[in-house]
Image 1 (cartoon, rainbow over the protein chains, first blue to last red):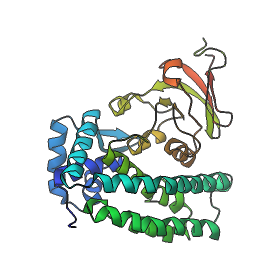
Image 2 (tube, helix red, strand yellow):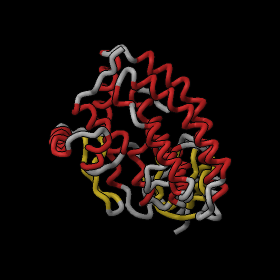
Image 3 (cartoon, rainbow over the protein chains, first blue to last red):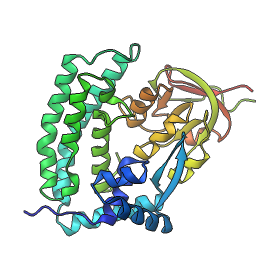
Image 4 (cartoon, rainbow over the protein chains, first blue to last red):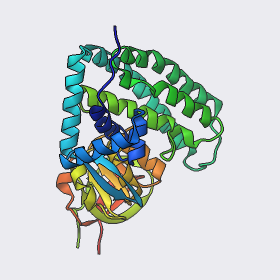
Amino acid sequence: MTARTSPAGLLVLHAVRLKGFARTDAVAARFGLDAAQTHEELLDAEAYGRVTRASFAGLTGWSLTEAGRRRNEAELREELDAHDARDAVAAMHDDFLPLNSQATRTFTAWQLESMDSPAKAVPGDLIGQLAGLAQRLHPLERRLTERLTRFGGYHRRFAEALAHASDDPAWVTGMEVDSCHRVWFELHEDLVASLGISR
Amino acid sequence: MTAVEPGGVTGVPASPGRTVGPARLVRSVDDFGRLRPGDVLVCRTTDPAWTPLFHLAAAIVTETGGLLSHAAIVARECRIPAVVGAAEALSLLEDGAPVVVDGSLGTVTGATR
């Protein structure tokens, strides 16, 4: 089986979908694209009404319009079908769901426990639970990257966040860093978008 | 005036705290520009595109989801009250009307102004 790479136009739109709201350099970085090419792709997408540049809370970034979201899902659908990858992604999603329940329970329990003392150190059993999730995530991701290279990187990023979490609790569920929760949620969004389903 | 009927809207208490603000009904990303700082974001569900809104909103009310949902986790991270799984919130709440969100009780009630 040969793993396929995705066209830049698809990756730019999908990066905006996954990041939700991001500057041009962050959109480019998501799939390691050239920044100038990404900028051009974003301007084209803006002209078609697929992305919009907005400012929130002092930040400026790109986000998908409803039309962009539909376009993104159509491109992902066509890609899965063209490479005969739909069944593999759907099967992976089925195996991901119980793991997702476990992950969201773990994140929620940690937040509720640490709510009154935000600076609390991350306990060893939480690190152990997250390490268990990372271990199970690895083979799931490999099943996807055997088909499409764009699914790569989630396990690496999750493991990196976990390594930071031992010293800094913000890396468990924080929004300002590429935390375990952010990586996990991005993977879930990727699967939902790729399969054209709702959560 | 009373913004919503007595009893208001109830859902899952997902992020603690109590606040008041105008309800802002946001149905899609195309409506994001309508949200102002201090508004109560009322929506069907959230995904990564919605995350920046959590830094502007005073509270979050979603029609779907539970304690483990994206909206709940992000709201707790941003330390703003959230009520999730509040069925029909988009139908029962009026855009711009002041509401009190209690993220510990899971209630959204009309505010007197």
